[in-house]
Image 1: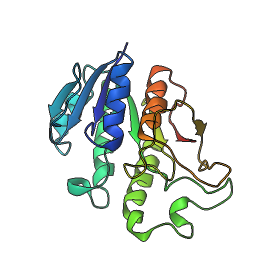
Image 2: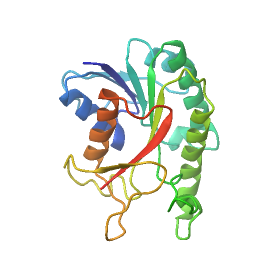
Image 3: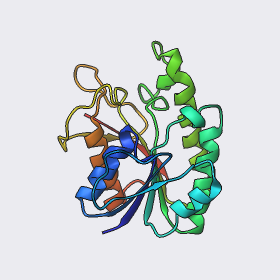
Image 4: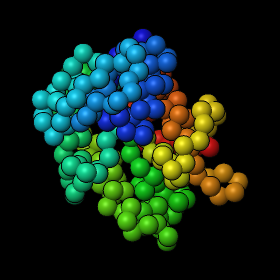
Length: 216
């Protein structure tokens, strides 16, 4: 089994990642600004500020995979803030020969092979554009990192979040740069099934220096 460190382990995606990794028998470390009231026995919880470079250095030591489940919200809101943190994290991951995973958003997916990005498509909420744009910038940053860095970037389905929790089915599709929709035109995914797909990628590396998407 591997050691998996999850940055942002108390958030919606991060908490699901912690549970899935723990259930599979991995050694799991969670890094978050505050400690959760309810904790999983066997998971190591650390309270730290990801804006402190030492936190990012420590996150890439003594682990096999580090996964960022951070969002550009709160103290990380604002153009370039999350990108700066991921840039530093990537540098330390290279130095310590650690694989890096990043949970991103759906906004940088295309609506079709030759179509526009979701963020640029009609109907994309204006309120969501700053966050989607920052996460799209993270993806572009990763593409320019040191070739020695083995990274993967995950775009969940378009309708993904605590507002649509769903269940753990273990049945989903993996795609590339185009949003996945079902026969009814819906792009959805539960938090538990995102975690299933991401920890499977950690267990059996398939996507090297590229993005993939997950949806039903």
